[in-house]
Length: 400
Image 1: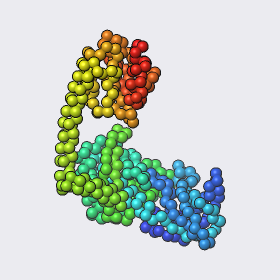
Image 2 (image 1 turned 90 degrees about the vertical axis):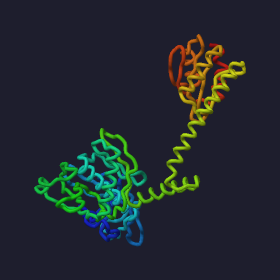
Image 3 (image 1 turned 60 degrees about the vertical axis):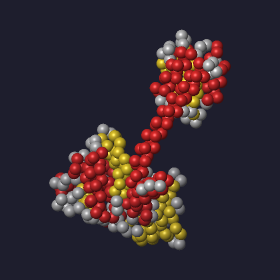
Image 4 (image 1 turned 180 degrees about the vertical axis):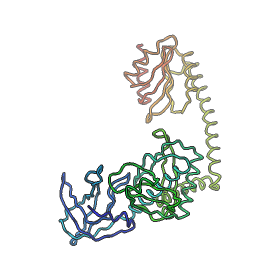
């Protein structure tokens, strides 16, 4: 079996060892090693990558995966490489260190959060995914309130500041029976426990196969980005370490840019945005009222032909008001469409004393309209352009 050096020495970046096997499968090259610093894909975390120096050439490690019978604890590791290496070759391994450190920061942060969720609220982690491109996610089996999430983040960063030790241990089957730890499931092979803090009163103890940082202070910072319902509980999205710092730095940069554009202090930005939102709402209401009056005057003067098609963002109440006024003044089918050619239009349509359902069937056929209604009025959405809508009214509705 490959000796998993990464378990005991997670900060070891280079190692000289021997290739114990080499083979090809489905056009890919694989090797196995006597000892390894490369963590394989396992437990919700991607495999390490890096290089192998051998006989003056450099070979890339593309992936690592477990092989064998996991249910019986008989597993080993094989590595996909971009070039074959002969069996019994002495090789020098070099880890893609920044990627490994980033994953250890975030995985160790997940242990801190999961341990605190269990200790503070009695919930269990039932799902975890560590991505290199997206925020880390964990799912717990209970519903967390915003106040609980705020407390959780505060306590997590206190644990980072306390710089608690993170250690691993390998208890035997008898010892395990008397231990309390998360992920307490049947594992055929040797169970590896990760303990955060003092063994007498730990912050967390969890069965885990992945490398971690040596102290919580190395996690740097833990930032919870969002929460959402999931599997009857709560999914948290978060970042730790360098990735958390970069996220906070970008966010502060955006805030500074907004403050500079408003020529104000950063703490004043939320209030100014609220004021702009309120001002915009008032202006849109005035614009909508003006638009309605303009359309209705045009209709009463006999100058309006066809449906109303506008790029104004009208509310359902505004659209229904315009539609009701239209059918009171217009003979034949009419309607109001609000939206734009890129995202489509929502509509209210029908005609005084006419069957709106007939219009609806024709709109489904020629405008790919979706929706429904009654014989008095139909409503829905179409992805067609303004020109197509007006052409349809000109060429099709006249014959209904």
